[in-house]
Length: 432
Image 1 (spheres, rainbow, N blue to C red):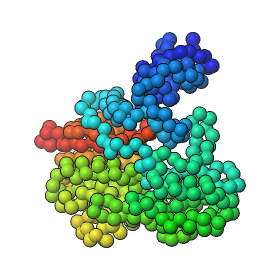
Image 2 (cartoon, rainbow, N blue to C red):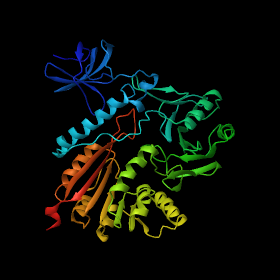
Image 3 (spheres, one colour):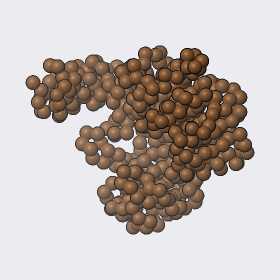
Image 4 (cartoon, helix red, strand yellow):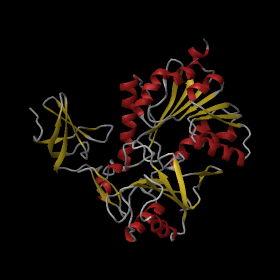
């Protein structure tokens, strides 16, 4: 019988949706982080429940051909860094198909995982912890002991971000670490940056030195201070501009989009645009499109020149403001930006196409009901959680048929999985 502290030699027979090795032993399923499928290791049990257990690797005895060795694999934000990119693509496709079947009862062909094959230095937004130190130190958590480790560079962050964290590593400043919690860096393809320090108060020890030090880097366009007002959220509702502007310009197809430190924008823009291009190719031409949970309108603006009308629905005031700025700047009069909850606004609209890009918890039941009862003949569902996607697709199946399921490797080296599903109105439902 397994108990905490038990040691055994075992071989992983699978890799689960969290990237953990799966071992079976004496009726237990044992989950082992950092153990790849086919690898054998001496493992130690750290938790035991009725039907499963958790373990850690004490000594790996064999090595998978898919294993990659990288010093940053200890960081929680890169929990698949030890797995080759091709193996990640195959893993995501398999997990997507298995999850759709298990949760949604959906058996469908899943396409190859969409990727640009860039496995590192792709993030245009990175969040780092301020460590407990009189001198500013930036860190990420070590998965082995849940302790922060100071960074000089980070494998997922782009070149401009790594320049900044390396600069602060080499030129530290005294700072009030008790009031400062995070440093956030946004960048664009030009190598420009917007830096945000998250604090609990509008003035902190070392603030002027911090700003003056960063100002010496000429590619930094702005430095902001964000007041954290809710411990459950990294950022608060209000930011103060300490230097430059609280704006950075990102390309979106033929458009230039200005976003602030609090705006939602895709972290891996090249792969996001690959997904948006699929929507643009597949969308019904000269159609009326509802873009629900639109954010600043990334998808809607990207396809705007291919459709008759785009109706964006968004509840975040800052995103609405940004979307209206883009609309006015490019005189996109066939784009409407509506403030409100999508499931409520949908009751008063009709369209040919519905696009949804909801948060991780997926679509509200009321939203699914509105979509099913709508006149739309085509739907695009961009999901950041395959479990809630499977649940929602099961409920949408009463009115829609799945045309394509496309996994998206938006965040290489992590277990985060994005998926684009293209649906069409079922013939039976369309005729009723």
